[in-house]
Image (cartoon, rainbow over all chains, first blue to last red; front, side, top):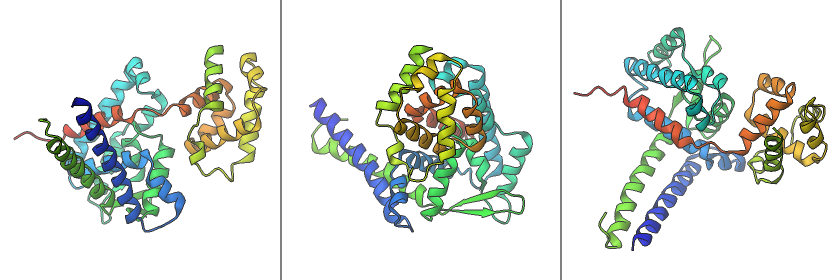
Length: 196
Length: 116
C-alpha cells in the first residue's frame, strides 16, 4: 500500500511538472521548435520558480523588502565564500559567488529601478540574484528564451542596462503547477483510501 | 590528478551529456581549435597524452558545451589554462542540484517577511 501511495504521489508530481511545461509551450508566442525545447528545460522551470517567488514575496513592488532580500542574499554568498566545504557541496566557486554580490551602489540602483518609469529588475541584478542557480551566461540565455516566448519584456535604458518586466505568464504557470500538485496528490491519496 | 583527468575525459566522451540538446550546428571553429590545442599542448603530460587519444567529436562536443556556458572572457582564460579547462569540463558533465540553491533563495526571501 505504501508503494502504491508513493507511486501515485510520484505520478502526480511528474504529471504536474509535465503540464507546467506544456502550459508554457502553449502560451509561447513563438512556435520555434528550439525555443519550445528550451521552455521544457529544467533551467526554465527553475527560473520560473524564482520569478514566482519574487512575485509571491512582493519583492517586485517594495524597495524596502527588496533591500532586505538583497542583504540576506549577500550574507548567504559571503557565508559560502567563507566555507569551502559547503561551497564545494553545492558545486560553486569563489569567483562566481563574488560576481553575485551586490555592492551598496548596485543595491541602491536595484531599489530605484522598482520606482522608475519602467519599473522592473535590471537583468544584471537578476543574474546576481540567481548566481547560485546559473552562471550569468546561462541566466542570460534562459531570460532570452522567456523573452522570445513573450513571457517577459526587456527594456534597454540609456545607461546600457536592460530592465526586465515580467508579464506574469511563467509565474502563473508555476502557481498552477503548485495548485496541481496540491490537488492531485490529495486526490490520489483519497482515491487509494490511504490516510496521509 | 591522473584519475581526475581520466574521469573528466571519460565522462565527456561517454556520457550522454547535454550537448545533444544544444544547437551546435555552427560552433566556433577557432574556439574548437583553441580548446584542442590547449589540451594537446598542455605542459602536464597526463593531460596532453590523454588529449591525443580523443577524436574530433569529443572536441566538438566540449566546445559546444563551453560556448553555451561561458562568456568570452571565461573562454579566453580557459584556453590558456589546460588544468582549468579540465576542471570546467568536469563541472559541465555534472548537473548541479539546484534544490539546495532554491532553498537558500527561499530562505533569503523569507527574511523579508515581517512577523506581525
